[in-house]
Length: 151
Ligand code: SF4
Image 1 (cartoon, protein in one colour):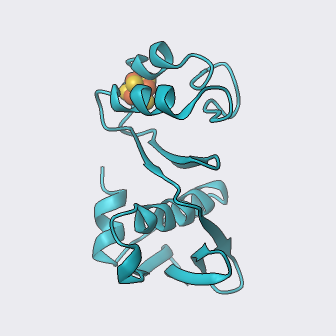
Image 2: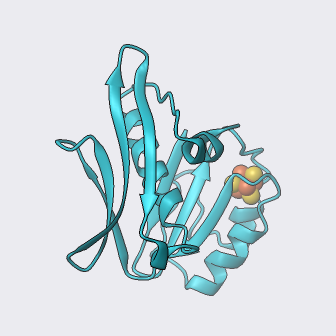
Image 3: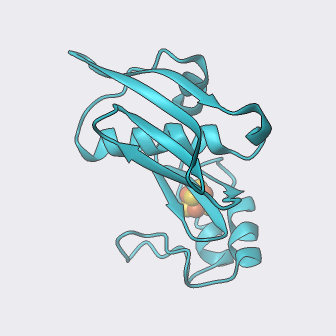
């Protein structure tokens, strides 16, 4: 299961398949990571430095994070894609095609001047999360999406 959590400052990614339940995150920021809550991650309970440190302590790679840089990522159902915006400007997208086997994520692209900000990963995670919530498989053929979603 892939989940992405955001506040105004940071974006946290969680891959449940990699989680070894070592609870380092819970120890590092108990208000943020609480397995008794649903959703179990709440980014509005602690400051960014504490959350960042707790994410960095994750021994399995299940958690990772990036700064949001004011970029918004949304799911565009009609367009079969996720889209990244800087204000009103579209700066990236991740596209899929519906197939009998699931969503074929076939393209991920971000404007070059926005590289290195984790936007492509946010785009892929947003689609993976949406597909999983709908109980639809993802069958990525975009090499970047394959890498992000691989176990
Ligand atoms: S620290 Fe990482 S491996 Fe441990 S419970 Fe948290 S997410 Fe899972």
